[in-house]
Amino acid sequence: MRELVLALNRLLWLAPTLLGLLALTFTISHVIPADPVAFIAGDNASAEQIAALKAKFGVDKPLPVQLWNYVTGVARGDFGVSLYTQRPIADDLVSRLPATLELAFVSILLAAVIGIPLGVLAAVDRNSWLDHVLRVFTVSGLAIAAFWLAILFQLLFAMELGITPLQGRIDGWGPDPVTGFFLIDSAWTGDWEAFRSAAHHMVLPAVTLAFPAMATVMRFTRAGVLDAINSNYVDYQNAMGVPRRVVIWRYVLRNALIGTVTQLGLIFGNLIANAVVVEAVFDWPGLGLYAVNSILRSDYNAIMGFTLVMGAVFIIANLLVDIAHGLIDPREAG
Amino acid sequence: METLRFLLRKLAADRTAALGALLILLLIVVAIAAPMLSTHPQDVTEFNPPGRLQPPSVEHFFGTDRMGSDVYSRLLFGARITIAIAVIAIGVSVLIGIPVGLVAGYYRNWVSDALMRISDIFLAVPQIVLAIAIAQTLGPSIENVILALSATYWPFWARLVYAETRSALNETYVEASIALGASPGRVMLFHVLPNISSSLIVRTTIGMGGTILTAATLGFLGLGPPAPSPEWGRTIAESREFLPEAWWYATAPGLAIFLVVMGFNLFGDGLRDILDPRTRRSADG
Image 1 (cartoon, chains in turn purple, cyan):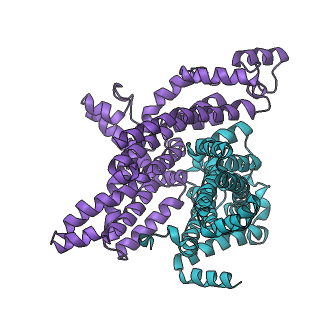
Image 2 (image 1 turned 60 degrees about the vertical axis):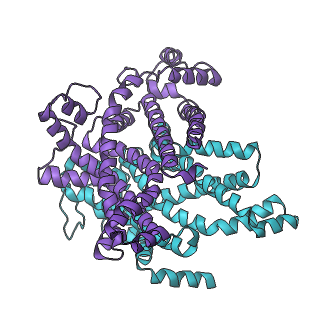
């Protein structure tokens, strides 16, 4: 019951936070630029052209009216029109979201599946050579620039060794869209050729993104296990003769993971932030690549749409993490 | 003086922190002495197209780039940009964030609620995403990178100082000074601030690493200082079309970013163990 109240309370905060985010992107896109239309029209536009553009984008109206139009527009799912593709930005973003989410999910999964066991091993064998090697690994994971790591992987595995594709998401057109996740769609339709190709293309970008996330997962799992290992209930179970392996992997790990789960919001934030540059390097057709292309074309409408969607994804992810945390760790719900 | 000596002794004993300090020192020396240490200082502004894309040699330690300029020399001058961006951006965001956090933490009224709500909205979005939006709107330049980074980083400091101030207000020494009639400004500046300074120093050090990474990312995306700036992120972006042949062109600046960020992270971790024992967990050793 208390968990439910907490979750509802969090949900109630969602609306004001999203509104605040809208106000922020509005400020960036409508207030900061000295003359957004001149910026769009270029240097050679005539006075009439500029006036026509001003009317078209609604920037001839007072700021409060513009803010109202902006907020109501976004509420209807209208993010404006891309200055480059001339398509509605909302459509562009929706068609690219699955690619980014699929990459993010696979990376988080990789980070957890590899990072958690390694974190436990490092804690159990504290100060062993494995612990030291893994420590160097975590420290590097947090210091390396994601775009550089992406380029290094490309250089080594795709260009020199030729064992992975250089870039892209799949060979050919991809499976018939059901969820937009190529791995799921191709498995669903039984198109194993497409599945293999999608998985093959996924390896380098997912490993690049997973690397820093894995470092954080490993670090917090190790710290959590070390904290839990010294607690009374572990002494008790050891005294009862419960095998050490069972104590560690069943009881200690469960408590240790609470700390790791609280970091999931942060990990996810870093991950989608890194996705921008990693998608750019691997030509992965998601939101990040869309944002980078929009930057190159000075398509600032599209960038604001991207900012909003990324913000919304991040806010919702944090909400889910908070709720999950309340469920796993009842102490937090009080 | 005594505390400084204590600090130095502790740091020297911590090998990884000492390595971090060494890397930071190296960055500072390189930035200051770039004209003396570089083998081709004129290559930052002058180009030599016939000698482009040459592999590393005694003449060119890290090879030459697409303009025939010496990658090593440009790297050294790039260190100046990195330091300037990181130091100014962090300085500005700390100078905004600390007063906001102190005021919001000290008073309990609608102003402090409003300040914290605004900070929370900024913190609800990954920093780089907002920084991209701002830098793109303002146009590519060093000043605008600094602006974008400061505008998106101050809420972090406001949050931190707010939380620290709220907990400091429950301490006896603050209650005592309020009871003795100290003004709010006096309590904030002379009682609260000095007591939260060590945790601020630790966060600033680790924040330097993160800010350098974010700045390099903006540079890589073309939102940093425009060509022919030797900024590291931009250099990596330029190198991409010459891979895999010109591997040195992409490798050298990335390695520089990696070492510098690692230096600040290691040093920050070491400082935290010494200065901020509360956050030190039995596990972190």
